[in-house]
Length: 311
Image (cartoon, rainbow, N blue to C red; front, side):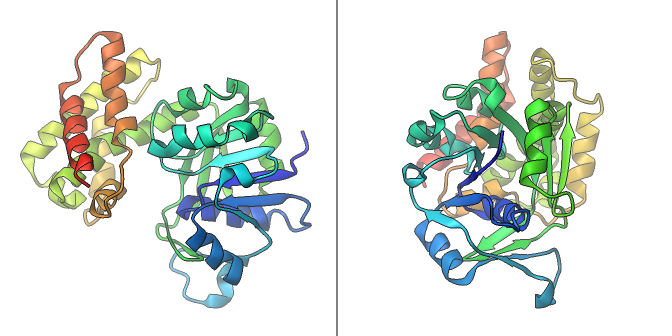
């Protein structure tokens, strides 16, 4: 398959980083890279170029500016697609795919890049599984107008390893532009990342505490422990072999950045929906399917639903 048209469906921070490295790998201009997003962001990129600032890089000569994109505020305006990177939030995925039905009818390959569990099941309503590649995207980043800044030092994609990803990734990204790992155990790593989000994100948003403040509150630690235990039980039913010391890994991971405020808390402050239904809520739904209760995750999901209804 020769790739001609690539779509970034959701030109936020993650989409902008991907667009940067896709365009850097498109030096000959043989591919069309289509950006779909908000008019304010796209207008700024169109006028000034898309600028990527590497981690802690103050020398503007080392900043990377790319141009030459196509710009759309509506996915239905995009003429064709060979590859689509879904970079919107998980709660927007279903609606976004419904809007893209005509484009999906030509069976492009869809990369799922957002946080959440069970997202491939949603995409499978529109495409067969062979056209879907699940990814873990590690891009700590922040977008302001046309400038996307690396805020954490990593720019890595972990994609499930199969025949399609092995064929497509080299066509999309040059080896010296981005750290891309193809992993046959991508699903397991996806769940490991989900444990971190399930344990901390909603708790931090409900309490409006930093990670360090949450860790210092013993009653919250007990709730988190139960959240992780319930997630572990569901993962076993799903055939995912999480490490036995997953909870210890969680505490260790969180303790490294005590001043951090997860994006879920930021979403609540900005009056935006969160991904809780695709994290804690997914554990609740799967627990019901397998016939056991997940009371901690159920309570957290309900509390977040109430909070989101008020924003």
